[in-house]
Length: 170
Length: 148
Image (cartoon, rainbow over all chains, first blue to last red; front, side, top):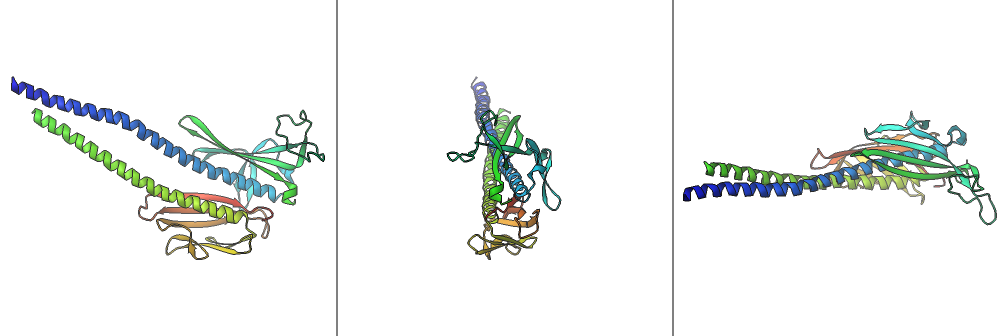
């Protein structure tokens, strides 16, 4: 009878040990997964920031070295390309670094009609004419957007740059 | 028999704990190495973004050597020191000795000939000094600003 009790005790010890280990694994594994996901997200954001900066820098360079801005249609998406020199071509960059999508949108700038009180202040409104504004032919808003899929959720980074011919001396 | 099963289970548990500890320690070391590279990347991004954007004049001396005349008329010469594998500015290293710069390449994609505004693409490849498996490559585009 005592021998039987000792046998049971060994199995009980093993079951308790496995139980404790399982509880530890169940608790630790989701935390590890969380940290890995967070690290990956941080890396993706860093890379997306570089792509965003690249888009902004190319768009600025193209607009600061081109006097004929009519070459780039308003409300159209462009992507940067280089063949010895930077150029913007209509379209959207997809599968950048196998993950990212990037586009550079050219937007018209709506301004308040110049008066002594408000000399051409920018009007951030959906309908320029309804707000009694005027589109400024010497200004453009360059909006770069980088988006990527992260575990089924679309992440987006956007940056906006205002360029004016007066400041660029074009 | 029960003793044998017990010992086997305990051995498995012991091995599991040892492996988990080793993995955690190793990943901690790996994270530190990656952090070194991230820091170097951020430093270089900041350094080149500021100096190129606000440069008075930019001269590409060779595909891995760049000379910038700053807004205060001082000059900054950047190049890769192949013996120490560090990027130097006027002879002084600006990257850490824990990071080896394996490649530093400058491409000029400006639309107009000099002295018009420049737009440069820098390609930098780096790896950890002690662990070559930890490596990173990045591309940085910076355009010179009007009135700089």
